[in-house]
Amino acid sequence: MLRKSRNPSESSVFSKIYNFFVSISRHSRESLIDLACVTALIGYFLHFALPSLRGGFGADEPMNLYFYWHPGILRCLWANVCFWSNFYRPAGALYYLPLYDFFGLNPEPYRIVQVGIVAASIPIIYWLSRLLTTSRSVAFLGTIIVSYHADLANLVFRGSMIYDALCGLFYFTALAYYIHVREQRANLRSLQITVFLLLYIFALNAKEMAVTLPVIALIYEVLKWPGLDDWKLFVRQNSRSAIPPLVAGVLAAIYIYGKTHGSGPLVEAEVYRPQYSWHTFLESNAQFVNELRFHHGPIPVVALLLLWAGVFFYAFMRRDRTLLLMAFWVVLVPLPIAFLRPIRSGACLYLLLFGWAIIFAKVVSDLILLVLKYSTSLGQSVGFGATIGTVIGAAVGHRPRGAAIGAAIGAAIAACAAKLAPRKFRACAMTLVILGIAIATQWENQRLGRAAGILEFGQRTVQAIERFRSLNLQPASGSNILLKSSFPFKNEWTPLFIASLVWNDHSLQIWLEGKNKLSQQQLTKVNYVILFTESEAKLLRSPESPQL
Image: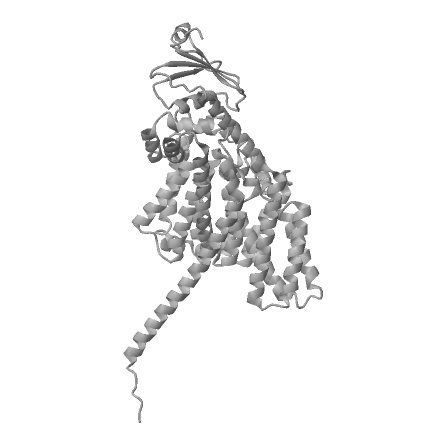
């Protein structure tokens, strides 16, 4: 009996259906693994960040909030549209004003939202790392380094660093969105360009660090091209794909001109006035690198130049465009703060940290493959791994502990090399490295003790607010108020900021003794006189008791 043959078209249909379900199953499994990775990363971050909920208000936060409260929500919204104006970081208004409207001066909601913003950045950073490296383990290692760094603890523990958190969120989102579209071998359409530019404007409105994004996107485009022998062909075939970063570059130029010209530009303030020199640039970057590796003394400039040269040489030798992009990243991204004095630190290095984290993760991945390749031919593979681990640990962490952790992990990795299959070995080795990073971060977090100091300082501002509230006073609209303060605030105007925010009445005229110069006529019109000291707030005069 002859078997009935299947119609070729029917076989083709069944084959397509089968392949479709296989691809869905594979995609779903990959998505679940990525989801598990992101969940683990956020959990790791929250382990360090949740104590910040007790952080109170930073010394600068009453000033920040007052700067948005005083002009009002409409002017703040307009400033976000006119991103080139001299309005101070208008994206901060989108954070401060809604929280103030709903929760007043209760610090806990502010801290919850700030932690939430940084936590929301973690999936974006992981997504960007996956797009750039195409390796889940490398992306995970790079992201866990960026998610929490003990020397950048003020990113979540100090409220005034909300600008760095917002800038990081929008910067990483804009770049990840752009690269996501380009990795699909497609040019951005009009709507996608609009989304990219809006995200970029939000990043600019959060902090000046975002000006480097168009340059990074352009470098990505250049590195994406397989060969640069024929520049005319390169320009002709890539002119359309370069439109979004070029337009973003125009926006950045408009932003820089607006911030540096006109009335009251930001650069008129001493702490924001650049000091352009080769020495300043190198000295700042040497300090940046040292802080990211938990050292606080500057490394020699020659060592910095050799480090940069080594990264570029390694990237060219590997022919790895992600490493090349990160090599440019670590030099270009800190440019907005590299010429400022005093040298910036802490959360200001959030964007820079990403570049070094990806470089470190790629180097570790290559070293694991090196150990796997040569461990069988080396008589003492454990010693070989321990030596590599010691060098890396001492180079990127606090020297004694870093070397000890690196040696232990390197020895463990080398010991596993001959006993495990290559795929299992790579997974085991990367897991050990990630565990070592987590342990080192925990130790450094305890050693530096930055979080505890920030928490204690934040409570002082809360106590000052509570002392002012203890007056149980709401002056009549249109009143004139004189504050006499001896409270040792970092900013001498803070009593005025606190009083304005506690009363939340734009019709009040508040003067601060010693800061506002008052005429005799103005003094006679004062309705309230309030003494504000470190121990109390006391009403000295009011319309009901003029001789109090």
